[in-house]
Image 1: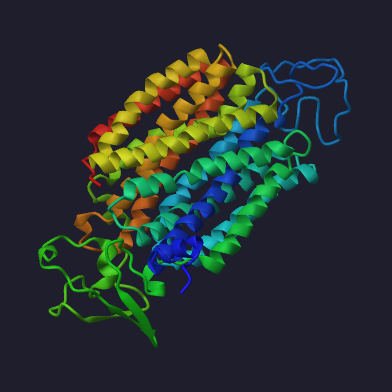
Image 2 (image 1 turned 45 degrees about the vertical axis):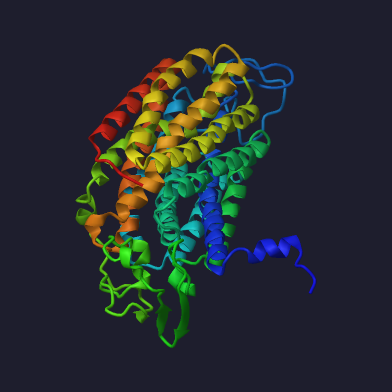
Length: 516
């Protein structure tokens, strides 16, 4: 018999469960990356919405951060739908406050909606819920871009579009975290979710590149194309997302591989023999689908478990019940300030680079992606360290402690030159995004499957939504404060960010230990 080709040997070396687990990992990664891809254009387009009040020359107009008007006529013809200072109503001296209000509208709606999203998500099929949210998000992201083609200059139009988009995007995070946690156990959750959470940075990078490609020529496409991507991924979600391993008779734990088959309206599960030394161990929520619906072990070691299609039958946890889980409130407050810092960079970094390094809008957008590249390494590093130490809280505290002085150095050396800016973007991205990534993924999943829940797996989306929703309050405040403070100098913005980082560290000190 001929020997199998290397590629086929590689394929068959993995079990059916492992292939499905890898598929869900990649799919949820791409789904949420598309959400972040659609959030990035507004930060790239800011420099284009207000640009012509700066100095001009024969070939191009460069943004140097000064909002002074000139009576000279630009050397090139302005489009009919633009004023001498950019795009109305952002062509006024208060453009920074207006742009900050757009950020605040989106993020405030996102924060409010997140609290409701987790509760709703626990009671609806994840696939349908996430698909509807992605289709709606794609529509409203594109709607913002249509303002360019239809010459819409109403500030209210852009604000309402941002508010609705913020609300529908809350369907994403609780859904994907719940789905991923259903498929992966606790063993290497920090590493797995650290790698997976790099979707945030990947989405930001792709969003910056896509928006930057059209920003100088037709900024409406900077929104329409990302909107189309999100909507297309919504259709992919509807066609392929598998919410729970039991839906296709797979195990949800890396250590167990039960056989399964379906008969009528019930699923039958064949569980392997339970080892004697494991009988007294507390049950992980991930193994509940292999046990009886009341969470108790059967008297027979080899048995068939009959589960209704509806799941375990355990009622979803209430909002107040989720708040009583130890660590939820403390880590929510910690994330509030950590996300304030992260989202200030997300929405204002390109404009800061344009002001300080005197680059055009497209180059500033491309350079800002280095912050997200650093965020990828920071999230993975935080996950690896927390798994090794088995201490999530200590890992967050260490990175928060290092982030504050790094931000100070960034504000001091970024004016020296482009090389210094590149180095500090990478380092700041790693230290700012590391704790944010760890809290929103591994810590949220650990708290959502806390031992105090006694095996109730219907708390994960609610806990995740509470933590991320509270963090989103900070995400809303950060860009708004940056818009209000930046006219007095960027050094004051960095002072605000360092203060927020110190508050995040204080909130971390109040939280109980969370072990891997």
